[in-house]
Length: 89
Length: 157
Image (tube, rainbow over all chains, first blue to last red; front, side, top):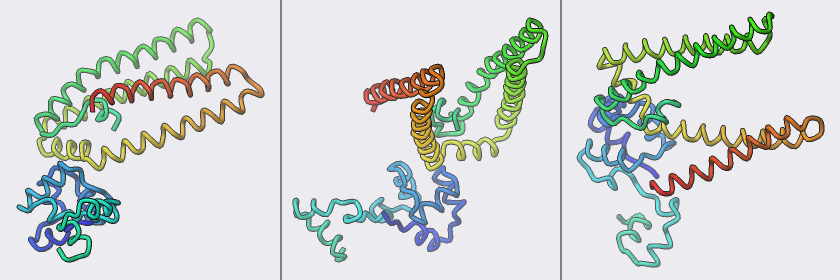
């Protein structure tokens, strides 16, 4: 799962330590999140989204193929999922 | 790390303060354990009238536990007096990535321990039945604890 934490953080000139402090984790966790080596829990994702004033799905990009849920979009025909999967969303 | 897995997550500094106070209440028990080891060691030395390996081991263990409990007491006292240190320590201890790391390390250590126990069981059968039964007991105990743990957590989650 990719995320936009680094991008948003740099946009707003926030340091890793400041973000870590705000969401109650260590700086190392933020580094690992930004590098994609660690996946945030739902609680942490929620805290980060709240901190940036955005929705979770706008920060954490759910890769359908990576998560093996591609079949769902065909099965249920959700246009949003199909569009996101084809890069149109 | 071990203590944080026993005394669950503290989400706020106040909760962590309470967790530390609970831990502090267990320090006398630790000290008692250390003192008991030293007492057993002294008894062994007097009874056997020689300083053998086991007596030395008990003495070392006892002293180690005593010193560790004093260090723990001082560290907790220092954390309780300093808000900044307390927060830093809480973040470090209950950071979700650190918890995941600890769980993974526990998992790997458990699997490797069982594999080692199994190898010891296989090899020891050739020369020592005592070692064989000890290894067998440990491997079986692991699986029993694993099944009990799964059952308990299955009810909770």
